[in-house]
Amino acid sequence: MLHKFLTAAAVLLTAISLYAQKPVTAAVTDIEDDPANGLEMCRSLFNEYFLSELTTHAKVNMLDTASVQKALSGLKISRGQALTEKQIQELCAKLKSDALCLVKMSRGKNSSIDISVKIVDKSGKEIGQTTASMKGIGDTDSASDAIAGICTKYLWKIRGIDEAESQKVEAQSKEKPLPSTVTEI
Image 1 (tube, helix red, strand yellow):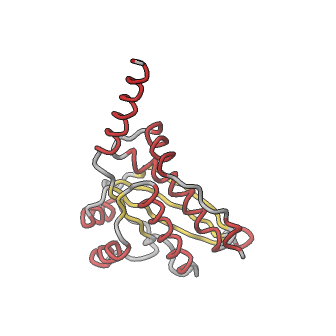
Image 2: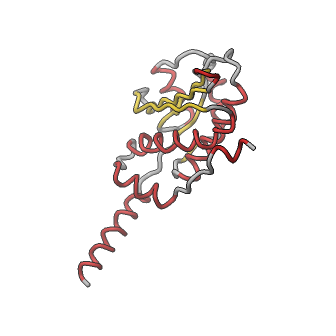
Image 3: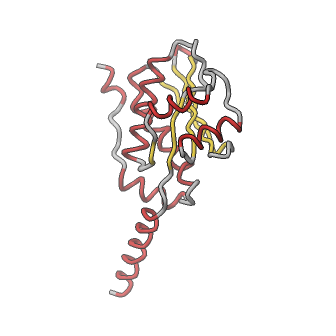
C-alpha cells in the first residue's frame, strides 16, 4: 500500500513540476528560405500546420504569424538570407521569444519537397536541427507532426525539461495523425 502511494506521489510531483515550469515561447519563420524557389504556398501551409502541432499537441507557446511578420518588417530583415546572431537576438527581443524555428524548403529528388527546421535560442545559438521530405502537399500533416515532435524536445530543453519527462507529456497529449494516404483521395 505504501509503495503504491509513494509511486503515485512521485508521478504527481513530476507532472506538477512539468506544468509549473515557465513555458517556452517560440516563433516560426521562413525568412531564410529562398523566395524564388516556387514553394510559397507549400511553405505557408506547412508553417500553419507546424504551428498548430507545436501549440495544441506539444504545449509550446507559439507566436502568431502576423506578429512575426510585423517584427521582421520592423527590423528590415531581407528574405532569403541567413540570419546573423545579432538579427536573431533582435528578433527574439522584439517578439519576447525564447527561440526561433527557422523553416527552409527546397525541391528534392523526384519532385519531393525537402523541409529543414533549425531551432535557435534567443542568443542566436543553434539548439538543434531536423529534416523531413514530402512526396506532395498531401504529406503536410504527417511531416509537420514528425518535425514538431523533434523540435518540441529541443524547445523543452531550454526550460530544462529532459527527454524522459518530455516523453511522458508527449504520450499523454499526443494523438496519432491520419496517414497521408487519406489526403490523397
